[in-house]
Length: 120
Image 1 (cartoon, rainbow, N blue to C red):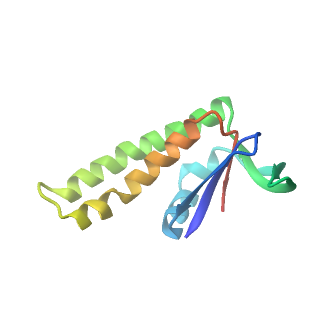
Image 2 (cartoon, rainbow, N blue to C red):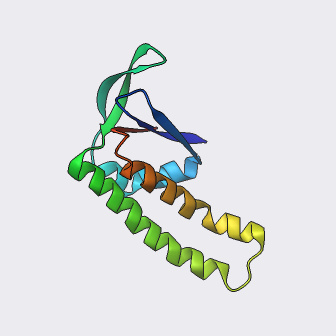
């Protein structure tokens, strides 16, 4: 498992753990072409740390939001086809995992209290 982390200027952060396969999929998608990470020093636990971050501002934030919205629409169609009329609980959980992850990331991208994103 790997992670995608959102940071604010005020020491707030949110970490989302994702499977390696999801991060590989993101790396091959338009997601990584939206903007490049740059070194940025943040204070974390009262210590200055330099991290490679992408700034979430204006058009940049909108592009990430649009990316996740488009992928949510695409994934919703796939999920509906997979589930049929009466899926088991496990089938439902397996089929909706990526969709739920996309939705969580979209909400964090759109949360303006976060100014940076980091993905490994």
